Length: 140
Image (cartoon, rainbow, N blue to C red):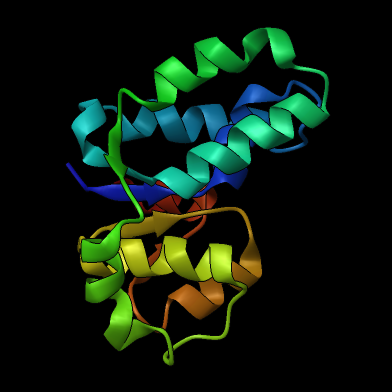
């Protein structure tokens, strides 16, 4: 079983019915299978998901989604994480939130999975990064 860092774009595609890649995203999660311990989530990803749900009027689902996301391996952005992140900051050009996600994947030696093409391309400089479609195609 691969260990993965899953970007908020993937979770949001699964949670929002109108998302054009929703069915493909649901297939990704089915293929991922395994245990929740194989999914690593920076706490920042959880905040992004909850914020987006609130903006879309999903306040009634926030607590349920929060509990679900907290069942994965959550990586806190603490002093220890920041210390480990130091060698990576100058290796890819991403906005801070995306850089944290990519760096988390590099530190924990996981595959980063996201729908954001820029994130996947730039993160590929420091860690393995693919889209959910590639994950499915590779038969992970």
